[in-house]
Length: 383
Image (cartoon, rainbow, N blue to C red; front, side, top):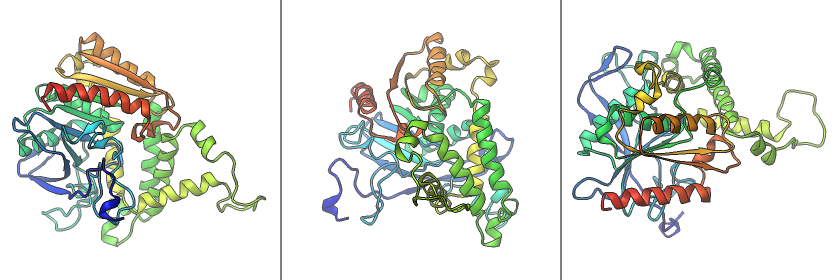
């Protein structure tokens, strides 16, 4: 790709930044980190009164690379490039967009694969388990480091949406608008079960070595691959898989063995292997546990209305009709609690086909909703 080939509505070439948080962070598990690093990317310009900043929170396997390209050799832009850029819903001509790799991640932020200063070896399984509340505390420290007192909006899909809700509850004065997309107020038993199967696939891999696989120069490839294959199935709807693969075979007759015969098998194996090449097994375990633990109503007597009563933000909640992992019914639970808590709330159900992954897609109706809402946000802050 040449510079001239970069789309006009792209943020273009971007350079990640490492932000060092030189303050102790006390975690829900009872442990603390004396300091930590967060890898971030920023797009757009922070205005004079620092009122146009937007935080993007990532989902399970996401990171800080939300938009643009790291080099002209990149085959794909950031994971939410269709939503972030000049003239896009998160318009970087109007907003200063901040995206980060969460604490515990494997893309530059302090996490299990980071060297433990006390041992000189990767933390591995000794890295503390985290909660969504811990991430919000860490992100609040990031906001302090950037000189941002209040976010014009905090937005995220799936696990990112959970962080948005936690932000609104725990840091009510620091969030003006909360965009909760394809999310849920807590995981269902079925979703916890999916996560446990994925974790067991990793934990039972002989190359996992109790989480110390770095010391052996190996990767628990088989377990991580299976975990991703299982997860990927849950991100797609049955209709989407039928339309894309049906029962297409790679040959005209059965081979009567356990090699790849159906196109869907080939696709899942490819997805699993590509994930192994870019993700850390200990981070995957940590992230799925954070998903399982999320339940903001728990400390309010299991009353989600009471939890949301603390919030001061205006909310936009978006669900997708084909999403069965975090179904529209779960978004309606959020909306119902927000309305009962007398919070300003807008809700949109997007007609979709793909499934849970639709929150990443450039669906016209979805983009129109985001555009309209974020235009209001930009006008409020004078952006």
